[in-house]
Length: 601
Ligand SMILES: Cc1cc2nc3c(=O)[nH]c(=O)nc-3n(C[C@H](O)[C@H](O)[C@H](O)COP(=O)(O)OP(=O)(O)OC[C@H]3O[C@@H](n4cnc5c(N)ncnc54)[C@H](O)[C@@H]3O)c2cc1C
Image (cartoon, rainbow, N blue to C red; front, side, top):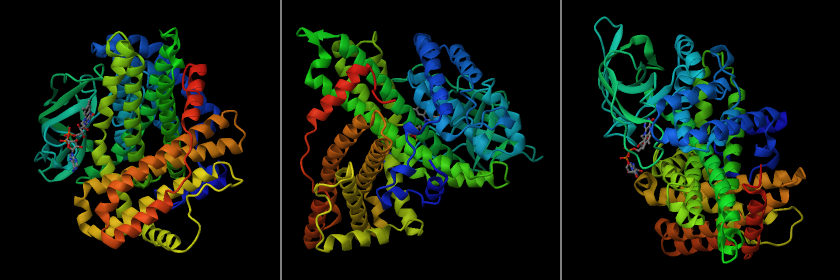
C-alpha cells in the first residue's frame, strides 16, 4: 500500500465500510504479504506440520509437558514473541505477522487454543496495559515461553455477563497486598500457566485486573473439564482463597478492568477468526486428499458433482474468511503504526486503535467460526463413514470446531455487539449513519434507474460492486427503520439486531472478497481469474441470503404503507439478473482437486 493509501485509510472513521464500497488500492489482502510475512507464515506452517501434528495423539491425552515443550520450541522460532517489542525480548512485528501465525498454526486446534491462551489473551493485557516494571518483570519470560500466560475473566455464574463477576479483592491494612477470593472458571492453560490476568472487584465494587502468579499463597487450580473437543488443551478453574497479590500487581487503573477485559477480547476474537480461516484451509486439504483417492462407482468421489459442491463450499468459505481477516488486519496495522509505543499515553492510544476495529473483530469472529463449522461438517461428510470414526482427523476437527462459537464472546453476544456498536457510534456522531440513510432514501425515491441492474459496464466486477452496494444500503435502510420504530426499545429487539448484524457481516465479508478480487485483477495476478469466480459466486449467493433476512426483518420494523414502501425499496436494491453458479462452483472444485488443497496462496 502506498503512503497516501495508508493515510487515507488511517483517518477513515471506525467501521467506514458501512459508508461505501471501499477502494481496492487501500485494501490489504493476502497478496500484499511482504517477504517477511511469507517467511513467518512458512515458519508457522512448518512448525505446525512437523512438530505439532505428529504429537496430536500425545496432546489429546493431555500430556501438558509436551504442550509446554512445544510452546518452548515455538518461542525458539520466535513465534510466541511476534507482538512483544524488542526491548522486552520480543520481535515487535506488525499485526499482520501475528495474525499469520494464528492462521498458519491452525493444523491441530488444541495446540492453537493453548498458543492463543498464552500469546494472545495471556500476554497482551500486560503488553497493552502493564506498567514499565510489570512489562520488564513478565514479558521477556512470556515471550520466551519460560513462563506461560492465561486469562481469567469468566466465572461459573458470569460468562457473557462478565462484569457480574463475584471474585473480590480487599486491600490489606498495610496497603501492600490485596487478598483475592473467588473462583474463576473455564481458564485456558490453567494446568500449566505461571501467570494469570485475573479480574476481581475491589471492595466488591471496583472491577479491576490483577497479575496473579501461580505460586502466590492462596492460588490453586481445579480439575480438568471433560470437554467435547479441543481435548488437548487445558481448561480448569482458578481458585483464589485469600490469594495474596502485591499491590504493584494491579494491572491498569483501579475500577477500569472492563477496558482491559473488552479490548483484549477484541484481539482474542480477531485472532480466533484468523485461526478459523486456517482451520478451514486444513479441513479442505484433508477433504481434497480423501476425495481424490476414495473410489466409488469406479471413479474418485471428487468427480461427483455433489462432492465437488462441498469442496467448492469449503474453498469459498476460506477465500471469504481470509479476505475479511486480512482486510481488517490492514485497518488495525494502519492505526497501530501511527502510535509511538514509548509515549506515556501509548496504552490509551492502543486501546482506542483496537476499539476502532471492534466491529470488524466481531465480524471476523462470527463469520470465521460459522464458516469453519460448515467446513468441518463437509469434511466429515466427504469422508463418509470414515469421517465418523476417530481414526481420521475429520472427526476430531468436527468436535474441535464447535467451541469457537462459544468462547471469546458467544456469537449471539458478538452479533448484538456489531449492531449495537454501529448504532452507538452513529448516536455519538462518530459515524454519519443518519445522513447516509437519508441519502439512500432520497436516491431511491428519485426516478433514477434501479441501482441493482446488471447492464453492461466496462469495469470488471462492476455488477458485483453494485450488488453489494445494494446489500449495504438495505442494511442501513432497515437499521434506520428499526431505530425509528423502536428507539430505546430496540435493545429488546434482539432478533432484529441480530438480523441487521447478519446483513452487516455480509457487507463486510462480500466487500472484502470483491475488493481483493478487483485488486488481483488490476495487478494481473495469476490467480485473478479464480478469485473473480469466487467473488462472483459469493456475491450471488450472498444476495439470496440477504433477501431472506430482509423478508424476516421488514414486517417487524415497518407496517402498512410504510412496509409496502420499504419492501419496494428493498426489491430495487436487491434487483439482479440470475447468475449460473453451478458451473463456476465446479471450476472452483476442479482447482481444489488439482492443487490438492485450497488453491489460492
Ligand atoms: C473451552 C473453553 C475455554 C475457555 N477459556 C476461557 C479463558 O481462558 N478465560 C476466560 O475468562 N473464559 C474462558 N472461557 C469462557 C467463555 O468465554 C464463556 O463460556 C463464554 O463467554 C460464555 O459464557 P457462559 O458459558 O457463562 O454462557 P452464558 O453467558 O450463560 O450463555 C449461555 C447462552 O445464553 C446466551 N446469552 C447470554 N447472554 C445473552 C444476552 N444478553 N442476549 C442473548 N443471548 C445471551 C449465550 O449466547 C449462550 O447461548 C472458556 C470457555 C470454554 C468452553
